Image (cartoon, rainbow, N blue to C red):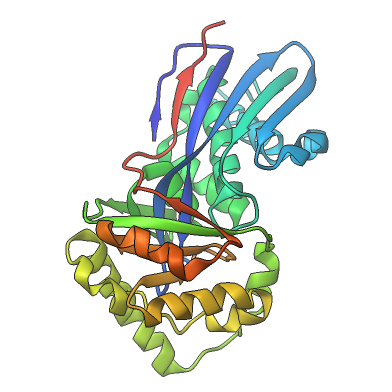
Length: 314
């Protein structure tokens, strides 16, 4: 993530979509892709104004329950509490104007809620006079606490391919570059799926053999994405979550199986229902024939950078 911190009253956060799990890397691996939301946040004397264009326009009606507004206020208050003088610092937000241009589909498994969460936190850090006290580790910790797990927020913050884990001291991430031969293609359906419903279908225990197989494939997937893309089909095999989620998204799982049967490394993106195909650059056109008209095809690239913040001239 990058930040410029002159004491502005308004900032723009440019935040990428993400795909988590990538097959076997359940709750650990994530990929940032070149589909972005732009969020403008401006301090105001009073009130709350929210404008949303593009994806999720209906969320503007949520007012104080809007995820960006909630996250901004939580982060702003937390930053104020970090004043080492013992004073709580500036924690009150008199008013906000939030303008969103959204391109990340909502409730489709492409990290829209993580993007909103990250945007709210980074905007609060940039606009708070004590924002310098809030480290990148602090941002990751708060975003993970809000989201519940770090697999989407990590690539949203760092870009590229990320491995995220929970240490004794909190969530951590490491970032890796992806081979330029790999091109992600998002296959996005019209229907939505709540993450909570998809997670609710997962069993509490899985066979030891399945867990061991996934551990090996997740390790292989890191190697495949970073330098051995010819291994992607084997590396994206999953036994932990996708088949269990079939009742919530039968069309998505069927498409994954059909593409994989044709040699394409396809997985359910995050909690679904979007399907992500990790292709070589000359495979993109061949996918269209397998997909059908009910899916929107988005050829993308790996986003090399995570969310960035810049001041807006008033």
